[in-house]
Image (cartoon, rainbow, N blue to C red; front, side):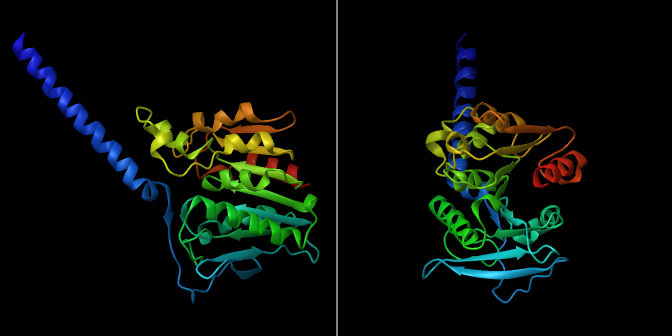
Length: 270
């Protein structure tokens, strides 16, 4: 009996050490887990296969937001899609996703977050929100609100939801979204008190009830980055008329390869 107690104590000690070690790693490395920026030199020259315009928006002495406007072939655009991208690299990675909108006659404005691409400044949740609102204000100087579509992909979905609160825009589209940042960590590390550990919140689930424009959500059935069960938590926050479309056989980065996605986007834009 004494031997069994020693074994149990030894394994319990191992478990506690591993549990604490993983918890400490999650807490101190959460920014590196969540964000994967790829800075670009200010002299870097963008090259895209569609007409575009590069814009620098000074926000303060330290922060400058770099944004690319992808332009449609038509003289008079039908409107603008403000595209908040995911957590990797910079807008060059997401530029190919703009064509579905430019082909339908819309401009696509794609800003980079602080520390991503040519954008400068320290990344914080408050700056993500402020930047999003600044882009929307700029869009409203050129377009009526009912010609503005907010689009959020992955990390950008929560930012897009925030920017849509109280707006009178045409539409909010979320691709592979999440209910909140702690919820994403909780999908993987459910045994930890992630709500207290994770500093970034971006609680999309709290913004959706205050969004009065139509909402379209695209979810990937086989998403391993933001698990489907995490995205599906948003269903209960949708209002009548909003849509939650699950596309089978797709992963986090392959929705744009499925015809069902293109048909739905074309229908929304037309």
